[in-house]
Length: 431
Ligand code: GLC
Image (cartoon, rainbow, N blue to C red; front, side, top):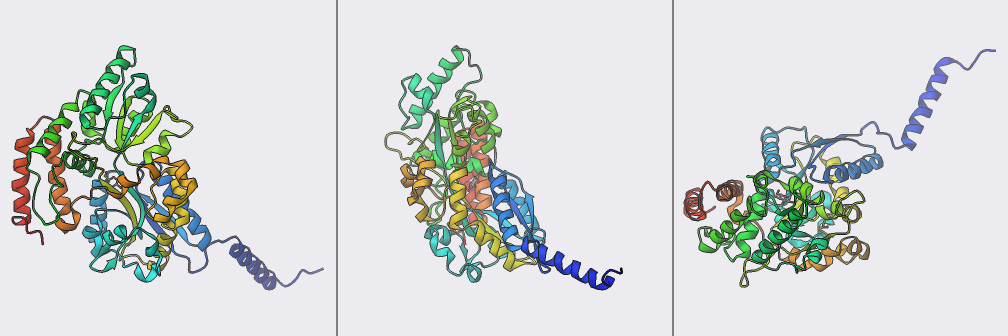
């Protein structure tokens, strides 16, 4: 018996295959390949990949995840290179809270795609991400510098939570000495980010602002960094190096500090919220022994100061698939994805309603307790310095690094920095 004519069989098979592919959500004929660049600090890459893959499956698009350097300053250099070349290699980029002014011209206005979704986010983030009236990035997660501490060790040594840097220094010293004498030779008092990069700008701004030494450049454009309070803040930090902090801290970024703290080798750590979920993870050596608090004040007349950080997602103007790329950004920054990231990764949402969510607050008690710290976080002087911010920051972190490594006194370094910023700004006129 002859079978059905061959062309018909082939056509039927093709139709079945197409149907099957459609029902399984395989890429449609006009599917786009969207490439997204995420940083990999802690669980960032894993979370970015996971959510983006879910979107790709749902929408039938394909995905390419491009890893980029963890060091924020290196990531900026890479993005500036890609964007100024008009490259279409990356469609979606992870944009630091300090970059919208620097990169805005190369980013798509997301307003037509967002259709009001931006209203859910903190208005301050939306304002930050608006450049010349264009919404160039959707807020993804918020950051503020926090003090992580070993609650078990503070209790063992009868030490209260330090409310000033001086108290932190004394407790760190006492516990470090005590633990070392008891045979724990690798114990350090305090780890933080001292490498010459944007992270040091964040740490040093916290020391300076907490001592009442201003914010490098003030909102009216005045360069304020050459002052006695700022100098004393930097001198105190320099005294930690080789004392309560390993000399290697001069080359630490976020992950190096977390590595030491999470292995149980430090009493205190300055870091961003992401470190909480990891410190509390099943495999962490310090699970159940960690607390999170505000960073200390600079003396009794100082204040608690946390640098404001955070990340957004943006679409490159040179993307060949702007609509699909914007759809991915809106999905990744949605309340549902932000909630999942908060629950499993302790990433602070940028949607105020999520701070009322009982599950999120249970998983991250600090998000409720430190809500004022997060709300009053100190912004880096991006608004006033505009496109020159990265040069300002670069000069500031180099000056701070020189003081920390003993290459210059704080007085010398800050006087030189002030002069150089005066030249950069044409005497405080930034625009
Ligand atoms: C975090 C913050 C970012 C900051 C960077 C410094 O990624 O979100 O704002 O610039 O750390 O290392």
